[in-house]
Length: 550
Ligand SMILES: Cc1cc2nc3c(=O)[nH]c(=O)nc-3n(C[C@H](O)[C@H](O)[C@H](O)COP(=O)(O)OP(=O)(O)OC[C@H]3O[C@@H](n4cnc5c(N)ncnc54)[C@H](O)[C@@H]3O)c2cc1C
Image (cartoon, rainbow, N blue to C red; front, top):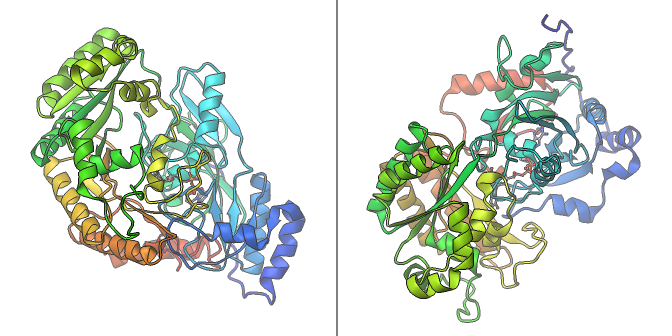
């Protein structure tokens, strides 16, 4: 039976006098005084991200459960004080906790951090917004689970739900997280809550394993939008392969890169490769290994002398300029070997060097790294580290976050916090067909624009499916160097415009550009706005997020 409860939409109200003050008072009653934060130091942390923004935050609320979230939303409606929900707020490179518009009260869902459901056989986990990637990894480990925890290239302190709502791309088989989730519990702008898919009916056995339910499907309305606050979601997990192999390969030039991308498409479409493939350029590899050589280059605005890249390419990469990182997930050794053979045939034939590591190779490589290095010049220790800590297997890794400190003059700290440390990071992730010719064109545009503005071209790509990938340039700088904030944003804006004009808009936006990217179809915009104004007439939830209700 479909639920028959009528959802009352909030009345459009006039703001009350002293509405923020009165609302704060009401919120204190609803969630407790200590969970309504107005302390200027904490607020200024929430107003700060990895690039320059000017949006102000009025206060921070930290409710502890769905009921308290509902109460906060009702009060926000009554006093017409907009809320900006974040789960953990590690939206690094895209705006962290900073709202799209000034004057919002941030509602941080970090205290809703329970794992509320888990099924080993059907391979899913149900979590609240404050649940982190690390938490799920530890939980599955403790259960001795055969399931792979979701992982991303960012901090493992980030939220599964926050990441999925931005339609983030992780590692492994279910890298496109929003494709592989269901049964969302959402608090609507009127304070009521709903569940999506079969979650909206009582007693349905498949509510956590089937996304669509019956009738219209509305999950998508709650991602990259502002139609509600998600308080619970189910994520599907893939199983650990019985036979895991890591693939590393190098690419010497654009011709090889183009062919490699086409080979990846073929291997994915036929089902040989199933995880998200990653390719990084030598600048990205270098910034993972070390920081900018400030001891030798004294000018704050100088670009990296080419010899540093040349040295890395010549010595560690044997003349290559790109490095590929992939995995073969196989249920048996025989299937794994057959897949490895196929990968060598298609991908191995077009790239420069390729190594496929299984348990046995890793054991030998670890024991014999010294003589192997003496004989071939190749230091296998790093590859072994990536094999044993593979994010393809869901193992959280923070190592790659050191790239954000590339231009800092202080060393990378043990407890990384790129907001606190004023690392400049602006991410832009154009959506690109999984075809070599497109990749070459997009990489060329990104590299030229980075160089034009004096930034090292820190470039990579990640496949999202068998036919789609995102390119991942990051503009990395030091926010403490005068003038760099502006230069970096100019660089970003030119890249955004050029890529969009060329047919490669980003798949996800940062808070600085939500008003710059709108649909070119006025009918589409009108429909979204009609939905917003009927569900949220007071524009209470995240006004201006993705340009909606601004
Ligand atoms: C070096 C580096 C590597 C990175 N690698 C990756 C990567 O591999 N994959 C990737 O996807 N990202 C990556 N990121 C970007 C980012 O760090 C992650 O996407 C991270 O998961 C986002 O933070 P969060 O999960 O804490 O989400 P939050 O910051 O909590 O949420 C993100 C946004 O979603 C909305 N939102 C959050 N929760 C809710 C809710 N409950 N209801 C309604 N709306 C909500 C809000 O608008 C919020 O701003 C990387 C960043 C850097 C700097």
